[in-house]
Image 1 (cartoon, rainbow, N blue to C red):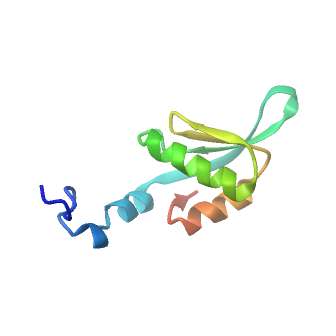
Image 2: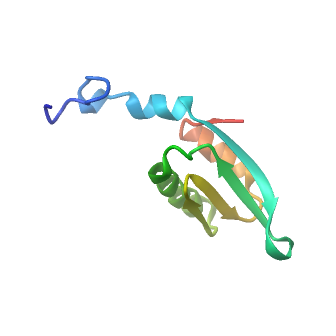
Image 3: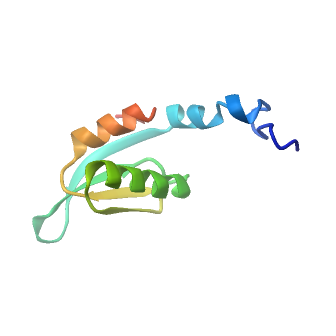
Length: 98
């Protein structure tokens, strides 16, 4: 394997489209749930097959929304009702959100 060539698509790393295609084909759902004592949380599902990506995306969402939360086992949980903002941020990053 050559260092500058993507193993998946065979294109040079600079113009590799594997990550973008993965984002476009991933179907995410954003919903609100209530937890202990009626506290609202925003739940993002659809990344169960990519738990590492969920952790990274959770960090970015928490930072962008200035809220707490976690990204474990491919499910992102954010404190508070941030459904509209989460959908907007995910679509800006190129994810398909329903």
